[in-house]
Amino acid sequence: MNKLIVSPSPHDENYIKTSVIMLNVVIALVPAFVMSVYYFGWRSIMLTAVCIISCVLFEFICRKLMKRDNTIGDLSAVVTGLILAMNLPVTLPPWIAVIGSFIAIAIVKQLFGGIGQNFANPAITARIVLMVSFPSAMTHWVYPFWYRNPTDAVSGATPLALPETAVDVYSYLDLFLGKSGGCLGETCAAALLAGGIYLIIKKIINPAAPLAFIGTLGLLSAVSGADPLYQILAGGVFLGAFFMATDYATTPISTKGKVIFGIGCGIITFVIRHFGSYPEGVSFSILLMNILTPYIEQLTRNKVFGAKEAVKNEK
Image 1: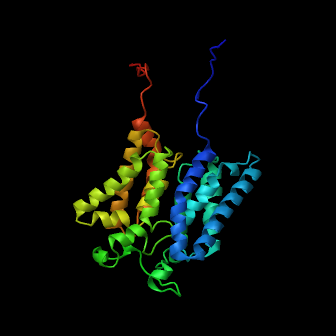
Image 2: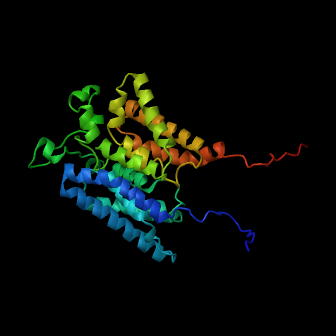
Image 3: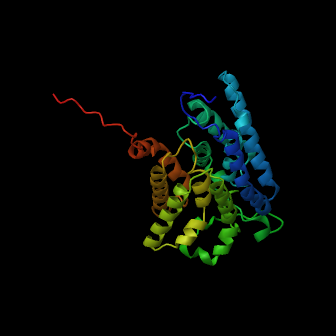
């Protein structure tokens, strides 16, 4: 005999576990990681391993010190380490990467209560802190080792640091395939796009924020006279749009909120790139929009069905 069971929400027993979500994100980043190894060699493996291991270790230590259940099994620390590594140049000394991992896990994530409680994306915040603290090391870019010189790493500017006519240096195909200087995981747009599509198909992320981000940047670039396709393919737009502007804890919940978040990221990225002294603006734009997320949530929250607005008593 079936019984009516009354209990608090949620009532869906088929919800996706955090570890499954994080595993899918790792899988989606595998193409970008593979291409980073192909382009930059063994140091890409080393730097990625340092970030992942140190993130997991710091999470384990923090949870022990706080006398809370350990959460390394949910794979969130692995994802943070992997995304952080994708945001670093291949020449970065490993000890700086460890500092970045500490900032991401201990300060940005665990200091605010752990997964789901942090107000900003840990990997992005760590990257920005490292850029401010170690600007020379964080902006030392090299061309893919086989592309310019098969025997040694050759320093070179990222596409965004070159003049608007840089399409003569880097073709659209070069940018799409990753044959350019940059961070480990941001150069190959094709690999990032494949990972983003995978996450959308698996319904891990909502495409609203990435499409709004990329579309806004492309539109503003076209209006300003810049090459929109070049602006979209160069730099960390795809990495930021698909893997950092879709973070559950630091971005709006509603689709309307996600669109606003993406548009804001596109506008800020455009402003920094075209009017700022720093050629890239993806990380700064996402961090700033993370801060604005609570206000976007308040602005776009759905009205509870059947609820009435509270009437203020007039004196």
